[in-house]
Image 1 (cartoon, rainbow, N blue to C red):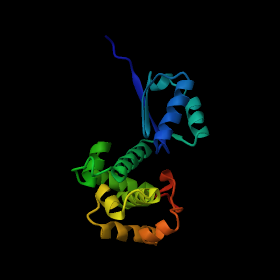
Image 2: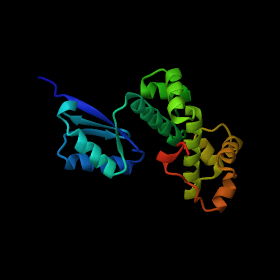
Image 3: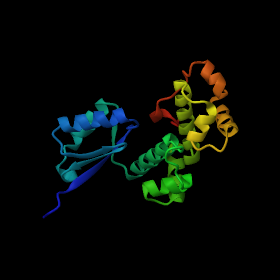
Length: 198
């Protein structure tokens, strides 16, 4: 049996489960044969040439997304999604045994040295700094829910100690986790804006 061609489209600003739902609905509405939708990418039936690229681009932009057609930018988006997985992983339930750099290289399928050079040159921030920012955003989220103590948060997120997470938090936000909680946790950023050049 001949295998039917599929095309993978890479999409910028997909950072949450709601984004997946929106993109799936929009692509289905366009009559596309949607095979799978995950953060940052959609697989559709058909060759790249047969797709209504302009329509897809316009629909994505209407919803705050962006079709990525530059190979380097596609790679950077893959790095960001790998970083998100690391930052939001529950190490209590499913510990990641690899070092961060190994995990990212494995997820993206390219050497870490190349990735870190590319990422820094385009984003003006290192992958390590970006990961710290994403982790702190996740800490803020967990603090805001007020269901876990700081020691539980530090354990869940794979930090070596409460002191480590506190120090990193203060360095990034300028306040301690308890000061942040007193403020009612109103200083969160959208995840797709974290680490953006200001």
